[in-house]
Length: 443
Ligand SMILES: [Zn+2]
Image (cartoon, rainbow, N blue to C red; front, side, top):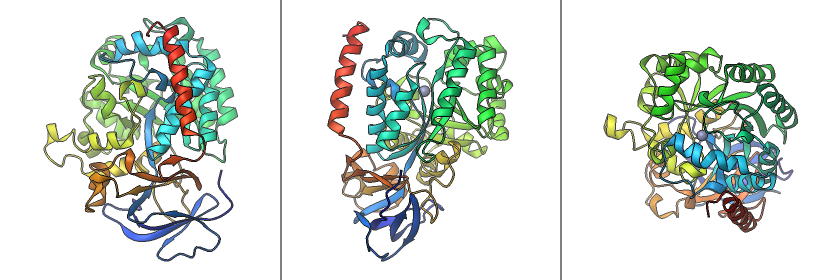
């Protein structure tokens, strides 16, 4: 949705993400959801104004892997590695979710993403209640690609999450018909089998076929944890990336979250097939999963974006947290400057948008979609001004987010959500989490 009145983002330093280091003082004029002009002293006639004085103006951030439906389990799933975390906390939680709780979780997650400057995300839902995720995105104004999660096998999985593969994929097809392209193309559908260990061969094959039939993205997890990777290797004889590729879950329309434990050949496979990888360092540290070899992936030409993953494994959906980690963590193995901050910013903007298959998103250029974030340099750690990428990646934080525009619609002004009552969302989430965790016997 875009407003009819033009919008002028005035007086900022524009970081258009057209090339590393490019910055200039300029206004950004937005009309009908698109960037109409970028330049100095643009006329204000009839335009709504957003003040960008003493601020950086960047393309909105893109996250390539999140789970907003997990928001109510945040701060209640601590100290566990992946497979135990799933079996003891996340799957029982997801199995217990009622539709109104999916809605409360999704609204909290989407509000947090927007208030933190993330304007587009690739999200994995749960087995049931996916409409509520799209409704939250529709109302709050994020550019969201999401899909229900598919599971039909696996150990310690509650029966409510296990579905007949045909019925499960048929529901996805119905959801895709309802939501793919909705809100003027802002909402898109992704087919989302959870991971190899949750899916029969039939389900993986069907998921790929469904995605290709309709032009949906494919989204799954791969090689996150050593135990998961070992079990997949024992079952299939190859690593996750190669196992998924056997089912055609590979290629430019596929995003694999994590890819921490790859064998030598899988780096080449990812690069050759142009499969997207969502690097999630925050979640990988929290669950002790390991450290993905991001420098190697970038050197090999693998397409990589960033993601916070789920609120219970991070515990925040802050792109700034992921950027700071991506820009520092790899120095341990590769030395200082292993991944420079401009490369990190690219992953968090246009490279992430490319992973999601979003057209004309991720750069501030005339005719491109008007998704942008204004970062106030009044945030303490962003002073004094220096290299803009270092300011954002190392010194930035959600407290720096002044204004956010998605698809030409202003969704955050002066740090506050404009599309919904932020306090009401928080109260709703608290109440829902209290009753849900009581039902689960967690409190
Ligand atoms: Zn995940």
